Length: 358
Image (cartoon, rainbow, N blue to C red; front, top):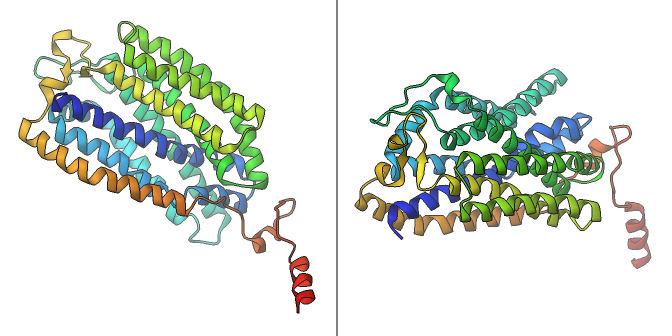
């Protein structure tokens, strides 16, 4: 396999990893106001992604950096054509990070509510806009023979791009609901399951429609893309079945990973060997070959990737293992919230047992 092809696969893996890992962060960010009816419950929802969200965003940085280093022609055209949309994404990511860090810094209901809304809106915008942008790569943008974007901002609002953005957003929401069901307890978990029972069927319907739309836009069935598309549909259906059977939160979350991962991977497989389609002329398409870096650069990058990627994966795996337990509200806070039920250990029984032992 030639190095440009290898690096196209690596770029695809990075972006799949980003949407699989950061996707549930986005979902939790949007849904935390719905699953939490008071500040304590909202804190529980936010704390469920507290140890992960900043590390998960590394996949976004690495995905963009990999395009920059391996395919500078692709990076130049894509980032110049999507410039305004990417600025909005960047602002949303900044606001989102501030919301995570600043929300609990003041004991003010208005302060916390404002940052909660900032978190929800920014978490909604990022997957929506990124989905539109990636959909535009396949739908086609006006690009001339010099690999220069010749359109305006409004040319970015392609029908296929918009459908991709909405589909990927709903997949993230369903993914977030599955994660909350896995990581929380009591009322927050119950509401997460209820939301998941609504979002999972919606995500499946949108995914099926998006798959057929993708086949039409890409000019026919592509075998590898079809495999990933089938995985996306099977994963989405499995979430619904597992939830109805009550077979476990972990299994449902795993199926959700397959659904969103398959959807993102299928777009890259449908795009190959192009990296950006030109709506002006097929001859102007940006491909793996005409946008790749030189052989020496790709060789050095491959060595670095082989060394660093396993280290990153081991670290993130360790992080998820350390924080694998469900998140619960502190007992002293639960006591102050009417109607919030938790399984708090009966300390009186433990104390009685200690006295008998003595």
